[in-house]
Structures are given as structure tokens and as C-alpha cells.
Amino acid sequence: MRKTIKAFAMLIGIGAILCIQSCEYLDSIGGSKALSDKLNQERMKVGRALLEVTGGGIDEILPYYADDIEYHDPIVDIFGKEHMTGFLYQLIENSSPDLETIVEEETIIDDVYSATWLMKGTFNGIYYEAKGISIFKFKPYSLKVYYQRDYYSEGDIMATLSSPDPNVPGLDQLMWFFREQYKCSVVPGYPCSLPPPSPTNVPQGLKGKTLFNKQLSVARLLVQLDANNWPTVIPYLADNYEYHDPIVDIYTPTTMAEFLARLFDGSEDLYTVVEDETLVDDIYMATWTMTGMVNGAVIEAPGMSIVKFKKGTKKVVYSRDYYSEGDIMLGIDQLREAVYGFREYYLCAVDPKHDCQLPQ
Image (cartoon, rainbow, N blue to C red; front, top):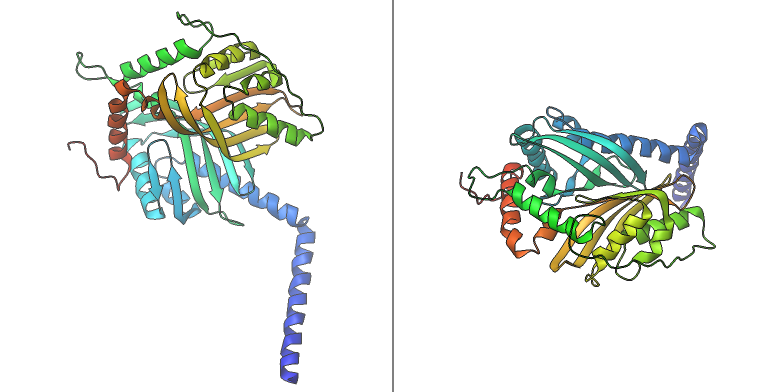
């Protein structure tokens, strides 16, 4: 019994010593917040490295992927580190050896890193540029990434693919047609015969909330707009507000109101549900899934958005939605086969585990 008590006392003593040592260490570097800040700084470096990797650099970034890494983009789904390794080698070393990605805006909070970026280079010899956004999720207290999702527009690549047969329309022509029809339907001032409906303003306040919660409410509303609530966000758009998506560029709140009125005219069942979100230093980023109908096309599209506020206010100065035009085009009978064909072509080029159906 005495031996047991003595051993127990020794354990308590060792624990106390370790506690004192760890507390002294935390105090010496500024406490647990300093540790958290340091971890976030390192995670930001990791996220940036994974996005900006170029030919010859894959082996350097592979250790930051967890064995159970899960990756998704508008076309590809990757599961496991071995699969991810093959994907990166085929994409960067084989199909896009000159690919360059430049990180623009980035945030990190609660194990989640998000960043917007510009990607340019060639894909199988075809030059293209595409804007996109990514989200990375880290394992707790670790630099290991277990989840990554990239959002970009397939249309930016498809718009470069012309047909070798002059009598057969290429994806570039189909892409032009789709974008033109979309702009005719929703962009105010675009030369089109479709009359826009009259927008309405229904301001709503955010009394009694902190600035963080006010910004969170406004940003979330801007991302989750539907046919009934969209007018309520207009008062929170700054006079110099601008909006962009893969097809549309909007400037000023008035034009945005006209754009939203046209978008939701006849699309009463179009809804967006926010999934992951961050808000740091007046910058909000969120992933989402949009379902419903757009101009008669049934869609279910994942996407991601960035919303920027005028510093220290709830006025939005900039927002951009990232989604795949292909997800919308799948709902249009005349374009569906073209999208499937492009996705098969892309998967054959970059996914080592894909059972390619194209003739070799």
C-alpha cells in the first residue's frame, strides 16, 4: 500500500514539474495565444505552398498532406495520399508543366485556411487563365492537411478548346453561346430584348450586434440570397461596390440590384446553403451549395465566395462567387454531352485512377 502511495506521489510530482516547465515556456513566449498565432503562421505558409507548387516541387509539399487526404474540384475527386500524389504528378508534371498559381487574398481561422488565386499556364499545350478559390482543413494542432477543395470555372478552360473540324462547333463556341445567353438574361444594360423586372429595396437593420456579427450577417446574407431576401442586402453595398463571377462583372449597388432581380425572376426555388465560413480582418470566405433552377436549367452546384468589407464597417466593397459553369450547363440538354465530354478528357489527363473511356 505504501509503495502504491509513494508511486502515486511520484507521478503527481513529475506532473507538477512538467506543468511548471510548460507554464514557464508558455509565459516565456507570450502564452497559448502566441502558440496559436505561430501555428497559424506556419499553416498559412503550408497553404500557400500547396497552392503555388510548380513543376519539380511536388516532393517538397507531399509531407503536408495527411494519409487520408480528401480533395475535390469541379471535376476531380481524390481520396488518399497515394491517389493525391499521382494526381499532382499527372496534372503538374505531365499536363501543365508551366502552371503558375499566384495567391491573392488569404485567411486562416480554426484549422481552416482559405485563399483566392490566379492560375495561368498551359493544359496539354492550350494556354488559359483562371481565377479560383480554395479551402484547406488541417488536423488539430498539426500542419497536416486532410481536406482540400478548389473552385474555378471550367469555362475558362473550355473557352480555349476549338474544334479541328470547321463544320463542327468546338467547346469554345458552345462556351461563348452559354455565356452570351446568361448575360442576356441577367446583366443590366447588356444589348438584349429581355426586359428586366423592377428591383425593390427593403432595408433591414443590424442593431445590437458587434461589428463581427454584423459583418457575418451581411456576408452570409449576400451569399445565401434567394428570390425573397435579395433586396435586403442592397443597402449594405458600398457606393463603389463591385461583384464578379465566372461570367458576370457588376459595378455599383444599383446595377447589382437589377442583376439580382433578373437572376431571381422565374427562379423562386433557387437557394444557397453556406457550409464552412471564416471572417478575418474584414474578409469573409465561405463554401456553399446552390440548388434550384436558373432560366429553366436544374442545377446543384458547389461553390465558394469571398466578401470584402470597407475596413471597420458593415459596408461591402467587393464580392466574388466561384463555381463551375459546367454544373449549370449540365442542366441544359444541348450542352450536357459537351460538358461530359470535356470532363472525361480532363479526368483522363490528370486522374491516375480514372478508367478513361476516350480512345487512346
